[in-house]
Length: 323
Image: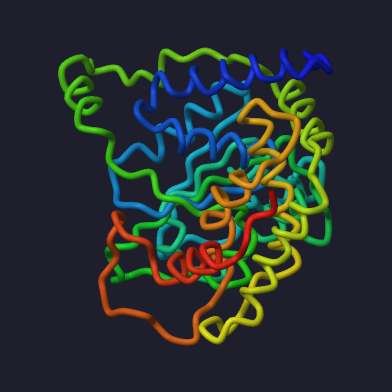
């Protein structure tokens, strides 16, 4: 199904998608909007949070909603790149090598606890995430579109983990926390949840063709030149700040620019407003900068801004917003 050019039809469809996922992942409207933004922008998402708050459920619900194939990969210390991308095996009958694809050949991939595997295996994701293809034995295999990687990492435990290098962090459009559900929602879940998970009862709302059509509409969202200057000013400040050793890359600025347009579309508008930029600045940019030193010795706390987020927030507070 190809979405009609009407913005009203697009807005209605995106609202249905939010409601469809929200029926399973309750009380997380803002987080669902960011996931849909990542999806429409054609990016990838990193969820940094404690176990058991619904990260897998969210990824599965998104895959079902858009009618795409879904694979969950549990990353471990002994995992090899071939466990992700696949391997070529010799076929004695044909006397030739036959490629057997790995779990990355799915449209929605949940890379669970990605920081528990080695850098060598982590790097196997780079080509898939950036190029939409995988190369094995000098042969390139394209991945099906759309292609979305939702990776998770546990920020609390450090034993047996390998922090993601900057080169791989830069491949993720957004990094965000899911957090615990509101008290009233969690109480309701405790009262009504049966043995069968709600996501198992979900049915597709759209198909891959419809999603690709929605992604094309992102380019049609109007982005005023003054607002583009404002976005660039934020990027520039990360490169000249005395607190930041490495600022946002050009790839990061391009992805941020597209994410803002996608977010405006998710909000039901065909134009960008300043709040779109301010809302996405932290989830899109905080993981792309490196500070010269830590600002505090506090441990990870989902209720507080991280050091990088605080520096970015100070930049946002200091810059004037175009009217």
